[in-house]
Image 1: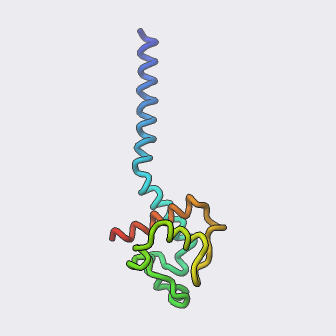
Image 2: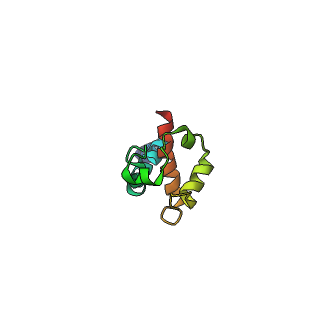
Image 3: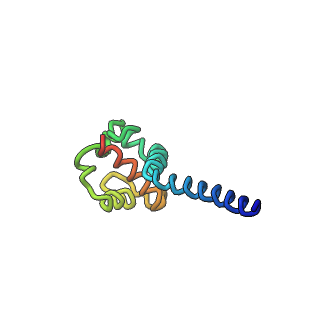
Length: 116
């Protein structure tokens, strides 16, 4: 009987660990957004500013778009991914510097501004 108790006890611990991991997966969008924020702060703030409004000196000089604007937020994810990856006008391409996953994370972060 004790061996069954250990078996089921171990199963219970394993089940809790799996549930905990799947619970982290449910919060994935927040995690992607948080990761995207860190990537954004490393690569995008010079032009777009830490708040995404593009009111930096360089952002104004280059005509960087306000990432909160309807013009940006109405674009599809595919359109924004293409712009981030290949660049557009004065915006450089980040496809060489960032992985597809990192670009998805930055996009998730930028999309958070649509809700505000």
